Length: 329
Image (cartoon, rainbow, N blue to C red; front, top):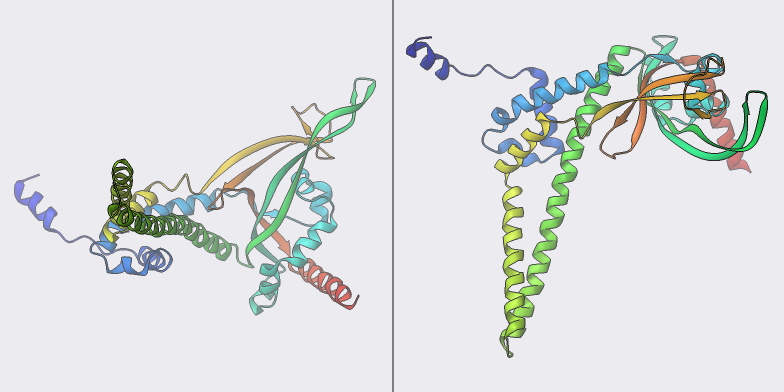
């Protein structure tokens, strides 16, 4: 490449950012700090990292397994669905109590199809117990066992169109990243307020000491105040828009620690008792599913689910009737 071509390429204006990236940058300003959009180089420095984070969220949602039918038939025949609920009635309770499902069924768009899609999430739990176990022809009592069960079953982004559900999940994934960074920002601000308060107290104490003998105690508190002032300067510098943009760019370029899927494999029998390996017994199955780590750092099984609209409507009416009876009592 000639020198003239190199200079021409260097002077060529950068192509405009895609619409999706510009929209994401608006969400960055809204959720992290509105003042960031006025900082020099906001779009220039964050355009690439935001594009990378959006691509990461696309891949994360694409990696979700399913859609998996969740209903009474699946509870009886699918080992994974059977492990997700204690009883088939718990499926109806989840559907009937879900505010997301209630809101969706109240919309006219819920009648576009007989089924709708959503992300199913639940927390994996274990408990220890003493139970019976057959070893060959011998049945042993009081055998230590670990039992797999799930709690907090919920549905997210229900919609008749799978593409719409996936789009909503991608947006939520990106917003989860921004929430995590915003929490870091709030922690810095809280630390700054604490440092300011500590420095103010230390200055008042030094004023008192200055009027007395001073000596060693005065020197100790002087050094402490200098340390507080230095930490406060570092904190203030970290909260400057330019530094925030640089930190956010680095964060969005490497979002994996804040949001990721971890594959899980566990072998259980029909009662949820965890086995070391599959023994060929038809009641023992190896379950494979991913767990999502998000901003609250708790692990949630995550997968796509397909739900019958009519079954969801029946469940909502059943739960409303239960709530009404409870209120009457």
